[in-house]
Each structure stands twice: as C-alpha cells, then as structure tokens.
Length: 498
Image (cartoon, rainbow, N blue to C red; front, side):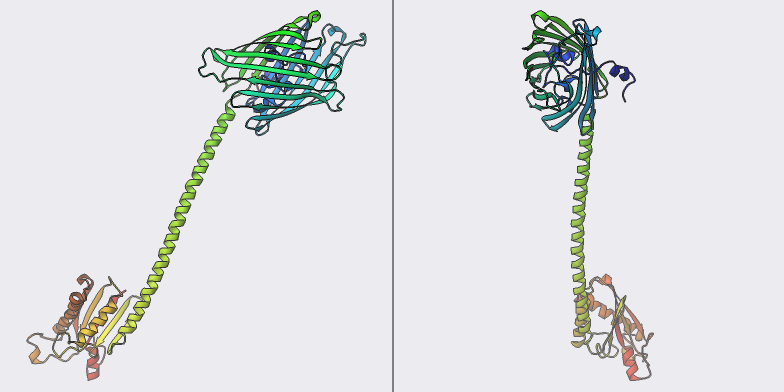
C-alpha cells in the first residue's frame, strides 16, 4: 500500500527528458545518462527497457540548479506480475536567463519494460514534449535541440553472467518522423566481489549518444561507482564530453546516502555535480539532488518464487507419490485379478474333477449319493459293502476296492470333516455272535470304527478330520419286516461337510 506521503512527493516535480542534463543525480555523478545502467525511476528516459526486472515500486523526485534556474522532475515505476514494469515521468524546465520571460519546456511520457528472456529486456515509451518562448526575443537557447510534439522511444538491455550489461535505445523519435531521434548505446560492468569488506560493490559504465540532422552531436559519458559500509554510502566520479556548444568537457562527482533494508521501504538521497558544464564561454557548475523511495520488500518476488517453487515441488512430490501409489494399486489389482482368475480356473477344475469323481463313484453298484449345498451323503448298502453276518471285518477284496474308490473321491475334498455312520437291521444277533458283540448297537459301532481306521491308516486321512458312530437299528430307512427292507437298513453312511 502506498504511504500517504507519496502524494505530495510525486506532486513535487515534473518530467525530465533532456540529453543535456543528466536524468538523475546518480547518473550525473557517473558522467551522464546511462543506457545500460538502471538507477532510479528516471532510467527509462535513457532506455525504457532498464526497469523490466525491478522488484519494488520506485518513485523519484529531482531538483536541478543550473545557472540560477531550477528544474523540477518526478518519475514513478510500478512492477506488475507477469508484465514487467510500467510507469511514467514528468518534467518542467525554465530556460536559463529567461525564467521571468516565460521561456521553457515540459515533457510527459509513459513506459513499459518487459523481461523477455533470462538475460534480455525490451521496453517502449510514448510521450509528448512542449516548448515555448517569450515573443520578445528572437532566439531560444534550446531551439531545435529537442523533439517537439508526440514521440516514442524503444530500447533493449542484454545481461551476461559475468556482470556485463549492454544497452541500446532509440529515444524521442517523432511519430511524424519530422526529426531524427537520439541513438544511445552503453555498457556497464559490475563484478562480483569475492570478499566484500568496506568496499561492498563496484560499477564501471560507459555511454555514447548520437544525434543526427542539422543539430548533429556526439556525446561520451564515462563513470565509476562504489558503495561503502555495506551499501549505505555511494561514491562516484566520471566525465562527459559533447561536441555541441552546450556540452564541452566536464568532470562529474556524486555521492549517495541510502538505507539498505531490502525487506522494507528504502530511501536513496543522491547528489551529483558537473564541475564544468558547457563550453568555455558558457561554463558553469551544475548541481543536482534527487530522492528515490523504494517501496516494500525487494525480495518479495524471490520469496514468492521460492514459495511457489516449494509448492510446485510439493505438488510434484504428491503427484509422484500418488502416481506410485496408483501404479502399486494397479499392479496389486492386476495381481489380485490374476490370482482371482487362477482361483476361478482352479475352482472350476476342482468342481469338474469333483463332478467327474462323483459320477465315477456313483457307478458303484449299491452306492447312493445325495449332494446338497452343505453336505454330501454317500450311502453304501449291502450290495456295495456287505459285511459277513455278525462280523465287523471289511470284506476282502471287494470291500477294500469299494473303500479305495471312495477314498479317491474324498481326495477331491482335502481338509473336509468326515463322519462315518454304521446302521443295522432289527434282527437280533445269533447266539454264536454274542460272545463278541452283545447286540446290533455294538456291532454297528465296530463296523463304523473299522471303516474309519481304513481311511486313517490306509488312505492317510487325518484322524482329527474323521469321526465314527454306530447307530444300530435306531434309524431305519425301510421296512424291517421284509428282507429287501432289512437289506436297505444294513448300510454304511459317509457324510462330507463341504
């Protein structure tokens, strides 16, 4: 937010746009206008591309004492994210010796500076220059030296990693092309000091101006600058030379006092002087004083860039982590689908094998099968497994063959719980068999146990998975009054829980 005091500060001056007087006290101390060195808000006058990478709003006012006359100037530059810097400047000049007779100049211009490449800027400016003079005099000292009316300027600055700046500008070209423009070129070099001490920085600068046409002129500006005491005190010296009658040769000096907080508003107070301004018959001393205010945090853009880079890095890391997790889940899902498909195929094969085994065992004469969702009930009647009367011995060899084929069927249900049940008819045991089995109940229990023992000891089924129980004649399935019914009641049942 712009402070309240910027309003009277900006209103104190008017735009400055002359190549004859330096654009600010700082550049005056460097020997004159510099097309490759950005100094304050007046630098776009020399080259509109210079402020493209400034990070803070800058405003400057300047007062010039020239042979008893004052010039007032003011300028402002505002960074715009993604667009570089925009701003403008104002000038009001009263001509030396004619201040009371109404002769002078005024200038207003606006600029736009754009960072195009990592090491290149472009800029453009448009403006209007007005000149007036008292009708009582037949001449005006600056007649024909400046553009009159609407004009435009263009410029560029190139940077090198070694600290060199190369600048050029085509300044104050009338839109109607009625007069030649001023062509400026410049170079600046600011080497990085390996061990800054009292001397915290160094700058060398050179600049040439060419003006063509009836008032053709050539100017050369040279200067050096250093800052001491951690950048708070600036000293500079230079020289300027021009072939026109108002320039001549002049040494220049300058000094700057500035704050160096960078993260808060900074102030720069600059003084510059040209010790021999003009040719021999017009020689004078020129004094120039300027104040610049740099608002806000100079490192805000850098901090924002770091934060944005960190946020972007965090976003990329999150996306990479999500992508890795997505790939992992996809691979896991693919493996699960493969395993599921394999399980389905295995289950299908098992079901097929079980159906085939069920069909195969179902071919045993006298064997019945009931297959439900939870239970398979295999019933062996006398026709399939016929024990001798009053005996619990498995018939050899036919009984073993039948149980072996049933064991092959049971192999399709590994780990399933089996239950062996033995049933008899209701005919009491003959007297000769009672010495070993007192009744049908004990006989059925022995038969159930002998079948269980076969599956455990011969076929290798775990004993913990198979139980045996004799039920005697308690659960008949047919009429015990007939031989046919009694044959159906004499049976072995194998129950498989799915």
